[in-house]
Image (cartoon, rainbow, N blue to C red; front, side, top):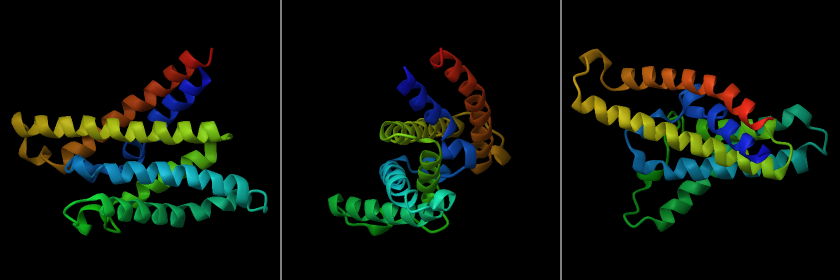
Length: 188
């Protein structure tokens, strides 16, 4: 029961799209979402292992989180290169993120939250899986809203990015209110 609480807490709370707006560009191209998902998982778990078993025993303490952003970038590039090996068309731009795309922010945010809150390896895995599942669900919700806005009559100044940002804000409010309910259900 406690494992479910960890998973759903990460699903709701550690969501980089909802909390910080990272990765909103994947709503327009959901086929590219596999690389950020794998980089979130890899950077979260490896970041937790490095901070917990290497940096904390050496006395880095809180300063161990400063290694997470370079680690997240390396994990993201590694996953992009591996995805390129399995891709048939060999288009590097499909997987290689731009520096300003928020791609590295997604991986860093997942790794940072995992390192801060996870105490055991099981918690680290559950937090990584939960934040990844939350990321995928929000991308699916926002993709549905975007598809629906193409068909429905939406004012011109709301089309595109403004509608996505407003929707992300509303989803953030919903997720923020869901968290106390999830904790209340699973903490009995």
